[in-house]
Each structure stands twice: as C-alpha cells, then as structure tokens.
Image (cartoon, rainbow, N blue to C red):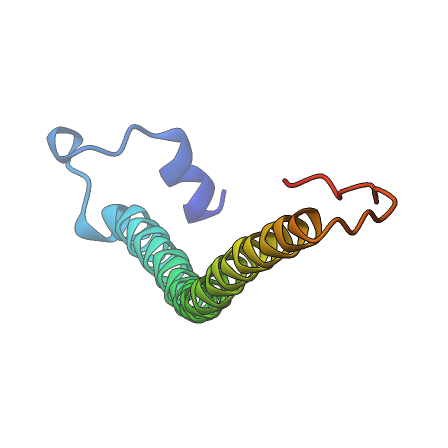
Length: 117
C-alpha cells in the first residue's frame, strides 16, 4: 500500500504516535486556505477602495450639480420677484390710466384682463 492511503486510513493523532510528517499536510492545507482567504479579502478591499473612490467622485459631481441648481434657483426666484414687481407697477399704471380716462370721459371698450397667478 502506498503511504498516503495508510495515513488516511489510520487515525493520525499525537496519542497514536503520529509523527509531524502526518500533521504537515493538514497544516499546509490550513495555510493555503488561510492565504486564499487573505487573497480574497485583499480583492474585496481593492474593490471597496475602487468603489469608494467612484462614490466620492459621484458625490462630488452631485455636490457641484446641487450648487448649480441652487444658483439657478436663486436666479429664478429673483426673476419671479422682478416680474411680480413689474406686474404691480403695470397694474398701478393701468389703474392711473383708467382713472384719467374716466375723469376726462374717455370710454374704451373693456379688454379682458389676464388672470394673475
């Protein structure tokens, strides 16, 4: 019989007088298994680092985009305020014109007024 099958068939333990040579294959298997786990862990760490860098860049793009949207929002608010002020000014002028026409007896056909938002 070959020595490998003898070692597999017999119970290898320190009490049965097993030598260090019988324990080495399991120790090497453990080492290979541990190193394989280390390699897999290193792969996962590398993937996580790459993923984190991608997320950092994505977050930076989102931050810049949000800043741009905030600026545009301010511009739009100001435009809305400007339009509101202009509408109020025009409504006041129209009221003055209407009062002046009424005072002087000028009658114009009534125009439909646009609805205010």
